[in-house]
Length: 347
Image (cartoon, rainbow, N blue to C red; front, side, top):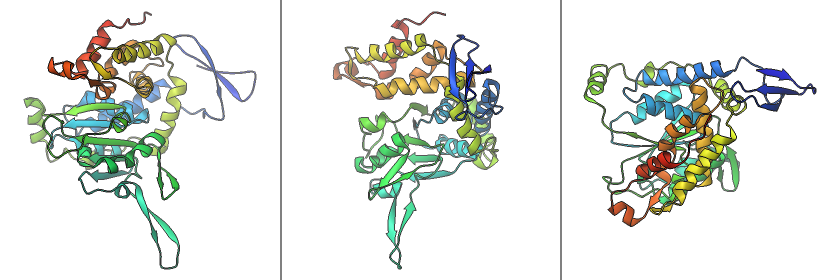
């Protein structure tokens, strides 16, 4: 609910969950029809539209859409031919955004991603935008790109800008990098992602082979399961409005924030962990949980939101000891242990 403050430039927002007060600058928040119900419908419309052509990956699509609206980036790990490109194209189409693709290979240069300057015959300098200048940027087989070229993504993913020859160019909003890679255990001729780059990805999902019934549907409907059949259910302006509205409409209690911090600290201090989640991980989990709460029709985050998303946000940032790997431990197992042992805040 919205109430006017004494000042004409402020409004009060009252959460239906925790009954807290917060002042918001009215000039930073347009009094449009955006509320929790409209947020939920908008987010669900994107998920449903992408799910029309991407079969059997509803939960992964929910995570990816939540990542987009939390202004994060996604890493998809899986086999070739399992719908990763279709998913990325369909997401871009559903929000009316631009889509560009970078095909990973060892010869790619940083400027092949960011763009470059050229000198015209009349002596002027013109900037040629690289594929990074799009709303949805797919970096296919990112682990086939050399570390030098991978570094071109760092500034873009963190600061939403690129610097070429000392000149900085802003990237469009919304902006999401969807990178794919083969599992390191079976991939050949690849470059492991640097820890810094891995930490830029808000979440990691997998894309392996579908169940038999899902594969039957994929084959039987293969002629219609194309991105061209996806309808645009939002426009870019609306997407940005939703992104900006979520932090103001969805409340995260101190108890839930502490729960997030306790989870990442438990993992950091684990005897089998060489290095664990950074502060960025906690922030990513906090932000994506807000979006998922709105997707669920709530104006507040509950611990179950955090628990559901933790298995996507945390594991790819964990480096285990050699002893842990020898004993069959995985980052996913460490996260499950943390979720089972860290005290969950009570209502």
